[in-house]
Amino acid sequence: MSVPSRALGVALCALTIAPACRTVGPDYQRPVVKLPDVIRGAATAGTATSIGDTAWTEVFQDEQLRTLIRTALAQNDDVKIAAARVLQAEAVLGITRADGFPTVDGQFQGGGGRTSATDTNPARTAGAIRAGVSAGWEIDFWGKYRRATEGARAELLAASWGRRAVATALVGDVADGYYNLRSLDLQLQIARRTLTSRQESLELTRIRERGGATSLVDVREAEQLVFGAGAAIADLERRIAQQEHALSFLLGDLPGAIPRGLDLVAQPRPSDVPAGLPSALLARRPDVQAAEQAIVAANAQIGVARAAYFPTISLTGTGGVQSTALRALFTAGAGYWSLVAGAVQPIVTAGRTRSQVALARARTDEAAAAYARTVKGAFRDVSDALVGLTGARALREQQEQLATAAQDARRLADIRYRGGAASYLEVLDADTRLFSAEIQLAQARQGELASVVELYRSLGGGWQPDAAGPQATSTP
Image (cartoon, rainbow, N blue to C red; front, side):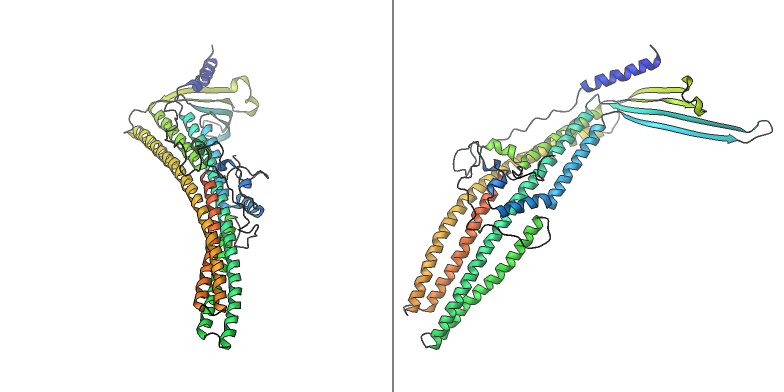
């Protein structure tokens, strides 16, 4: 066998053996985490059904709210940042994977020179042309590049899940902001209606005072009610404008007006919001999935670090043609080649490699602890949301009864005052209580809707594709 043939055989053998070589470092194993049998706060035992599996287009029935969410998912800057991070992770994976393959470069060189004449030698002109290729390959005997690729792939998955986490948070934030806006709208309606009623009452009190049926004190008390309602209106108008600005920011727009849909009272309130199985929560929550991929990536780096203990084996080669004249460049005798195999074994590193392995292990331990914390936090979020929803519903029911009683008390106080059986102070107190009860009822209704949003978000809902069409939350 000729020398070139033997060299080619060595290279082909290396190409065949390298993929089957040992991959150093531990293989990933999912950490064991303790799961509850039933999520605390759930009304019933865990079932396979969960509101977290429902697309947000089905959870939120207000068509205007759906439009706002779609706009936010398409335009929000945080979503764009998360998408860019996915693209960055894809590029890093491509770069890392390419490190395990041979590199081939083309070469072309041409040059010439002339020496001047001397007493003994005439002037000479000489030139040389070379064309060829060079190749280099560090054979991945120990799996360094395979582990690095494994880690880069996990980081891509983590970025993908991070993008979904951003979508989940954004859907919840837009829904929360919209419900808060509709609550403020309702409170403004109550304040304006109350102001009109109090102005009418003030005018009646002034007439009674001019007729001697009451005193100026009653007039001043009636004026207090009017000014109080006016102050509430001014404050609510400010809060509405600021809430619109907050929603505009979530939509990726400059501050502006927000279109409305259903009134707060007309917003559907789901009667059944199942939490699902505890094990399913881990697969659905984007932050839990991203935390697990962080462990995979860190674990792969242990293999990359351990590979530094072993020799680096590489092949380099060049080949091509060279000649002093272009016409002779591709003749039989113009060819040249070289092939070199080498190995480098670290001997003295002053503990660098050992420290790199220790660092990779410590980062893996940190990622595992962060994963455990994320899992526990997920169950806490869901339990808090379930308890919060139960309490919010009870509060709303009590506030409805309170508002009804306050409304009737205000009616009776007015009748007693007109009949001379009570002072205007009783009317003042009843009116103040009614206004407060109606405002609190509006807030309680918004709180119940916000609790549904929080439960949906804590269960990992919101990143599912929009049934009406593609959106920015699909996995790349």
